[in-house]
Amino acid sequence: MSFTSREIRLTSRPSGAPTAANFEVGEVSLAAPGDGEVLVRNLWMSVDPYMRGRMNDQRSYVPPFQIGEALQGGALGEVVESNHSGYAAGDKVMHMLGWREGFVSKPEDALLTKVQELPGIPLQSYLGSLGMPGLTAYVGLLDIGEPKEGETVLVSAGSGAVGAVVCQIARIKGCRVVATAGSDEKCTWLRDELKVDAAINYKTASPNLFKALSEACPKGVDVYFENVGGEHLQCAIELMNPFGRLSMCGMISHYNDTAPAPGPTNLIQTVGKSLKMQGFIVSNHFDRQPAFLADMAQWIQAGQMHWKETVYEGVERAPDAFMALFSGDNFGKMLVKLA
Image (tube, rainbow, N blue to C red; front, side, top):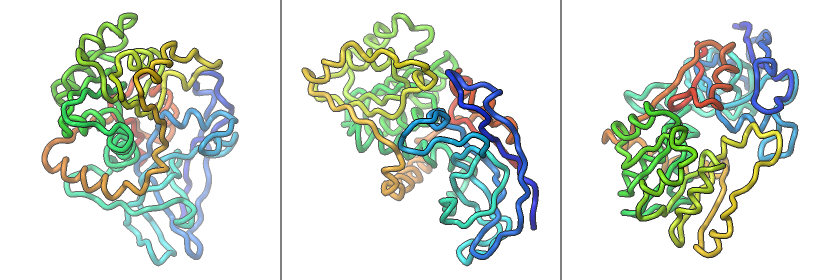
């Protein structure tokens, strides 16, 4: 079996916010798989903020995307045809060859892993709360934030794919949870569905974000989970209690900067307050995957875990979905449905 696969290629490197002109749709003909190979048709793909960094030609923890080549990212597909003893037609697989409708590869080259499906869980959830974003939240909060019962946990971008899981794990661990989000609708969902103790619309609170956060955190902040950067980080440092922990996951407010942004003016407080500030990359913590999936399965079955998704349809819409991340148009995990 063979078929034609459409894919999204990078045509130029963005300067500032990415635009449609930075992408193009291409086509490749996929032949039948050779010895040790599988043919995979993608069903769902993910777009994530970290991908913006890979569009720059600079050294980082992952190689940059190449001009004229298909982009890459987390995706979920189905094996259509297999010439590999470990995979059969119909197997659902996770991999990092998204931004395309299908591919032929050896499993080890595509980092293929079989999906261990939980009953009643939609397949695309393994790209969100049960996938890399969920594991990011789990490791960042529990291993780096080390929350203790009764402590206050502040989560920026609390309605996002990572932030929402952080909020709920923190609640499960007996913490007081304060989250920020970019709309009243998202804040209502955080309060009513996720049961956070306070939710703040940072867009309407600014330029008085610190005042709003101070009122929501009268006893200060013990753990800060960072997804945004900028004013959020400045406020969080000011509110941190002695021996507080800052789990540095991302800073989406800076991803499209064309010049270095000013750092927090109160960074010296990390010394006087004996704060721990630690960045992390989830790929360095895949050893935590079994514990993460076991805990998530238990929490889902107990009705303690909820999430939202924003879905675009068709591989040609992938650039639109990606660009929408930076204007906050997504509610929860941003996904592209391919089949």
